[in-house]
Image (cartoon, helix red, strand yellow):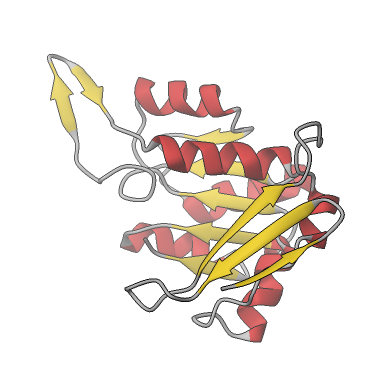
Length: 178
């Protein structure tokens, strides 16, 4: 078990996990610490992810915009109707992560081919600033958001799970599929 303590954070890394993976936890050293900001996040030291190369890590570090597809990325990908209405289930842990990213200064955008009230409502709850629903041209929607923010592909990361989402990959320095 390795650990370090800084003036603001204490990190404990355990490598004795039965799965063989190392587990890191970062704790605030004071209950009165302000929320993490983009500046304080860059001072947090964590071990590099062995699955990512230096270029990928650099892309993630430079990111200012996270663009996500919804179906299959933020949901389990099923389309469920309750009467005439579409129903969706979102993971609360994903939502909390998005809130933390937004508070740290990351701009968030959801670009979805379908449109539904549950998607709009969840985006509103999480204060996702850019939401594009019923989008047939994901490349154009991404360029529009980037233009509004003055952020280019080098500062954009994206995630999607289906062929239409590859349009997001073309406008991002880093693309992931869940």
